[in-house]
Picture 1 (cartoon, rainbow, N blue to C red):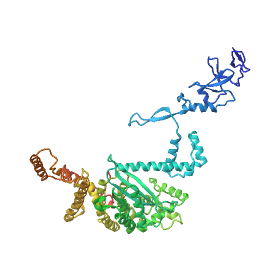
Picture 2 (cartoon, rainbow, N blue to C red):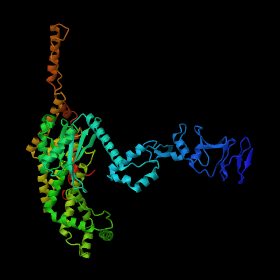
Picture 3 (cartoon, helix red, strand yellow):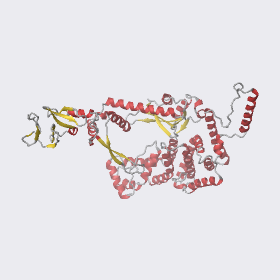
Picture 4 (spheres, rainbow, N blue to C red):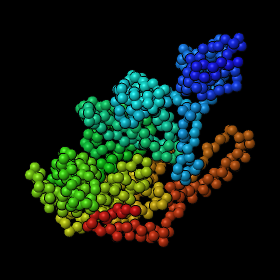
Length: 612
């Protein structure tokens, strides 16, 4: 039996015909044939009712879970908080709410350009959010205090209401936890590496603190033959930064990772303090663990050497002109109004140029090259503005522009080489040698330039080149020989361009001897020799055979070993002899290399290293 309320809504009655008061005054949104069920009306706006039924049980109203059939209070005064809490822990609930799912993009194969979107259940984890928050702060150097900013907390709540933004102290602990995890990963990677570890180090000054920090990076080949680079220390070094202070800091960093016996070399910038520091460290670590007893323990940074070469050349011929261009860039980038004025004139005079003026860093020559190359494209703009603005004083002279343009053409080869040297994973030692040799050939070509300032710059650069590259060329040459495409051919090709016949043989022998010394040292540490001899000591008492039989068998083995040893050649000699270039192949390689140089205009600055 049913009765009707004043809104004509059908209301089920109890078996005793006693009506139960219902607080709904809206039309029901759904009905059911079960007489004990009550309708879900438009007043039940909470999303939780999609997981519950309203049910009359005796004289009270209950909410029955659609998944586990558990009965909870369902009257108008009971609210819905307890229902939401049950949904979170319901053991039989399956995620069906679209608001609890997420669109994931996947590719059927690597050639697909577009992702295939699929809808899948999504489960939020507070720990994942805290981990990613700590990683974000580390990557972008955000202040830890940002987690307590009202705006950030509001933004986080909008993205994921379930995420509880941690406090500053909790975030700091998460960051340190991540640091310890990454440190252990690096330690595991270093332990598994079988070869030696090379280090690079440099000092870094924080702009906001004016404090000095030492960064130490390890470089090694892992067990899958991949080049790995990992920062192992970044520590504050108190002033003064003397050789002794730096040596102590670097020594502590090396010993804290137990790399004492695994060092191959340490690469540093070229300065007197670093030279003194490396002399101190050379006496700290065991000579027997270093390459050739420490001959290559101290290596000089190739990119920094290039910087010194170029800086010396520029300062000798166009230092005043470079400074006037630098002052001009500073003047026209000092304010937004000046930048706007410069760009307005540039659009009229040089509409094809769209690059913005860039100020250089005096200690990085490639940034100076970038500044000069951009400024020269706007030289007419500087000339026009010098006549319109009385505050713009001491602009570059026509002679400055002529010299800088010509020099920038020549320095393009240095710029490309610097970019190659500054890479992370792709530059390997076998690639360095031809680039360094190409630079020397280019500089030598500039000595024939009709411009005296170019010849002067080339002469100074060549002196600096010869000062630093003698020892570096050795290891680079060894790496080039170990490249099966080149072996000794590329060494002979370049050295024939550098040296006369007498010096040519001396330099080739120097690198060849260095390679043999390195191979011999490696073989001795691995318990092997360059010969293929594998002799075994005679054992007079272990054989069950008679002494005569034992001696005769061992004598036969001795004769065979003696015969084989007379024809033994080392593995290195086999490598160098095997697959050696035939005359036609060698001529083809030399022809390709020579063609690259002959097609370059020496005076245009593109000689030497040619682009692909």
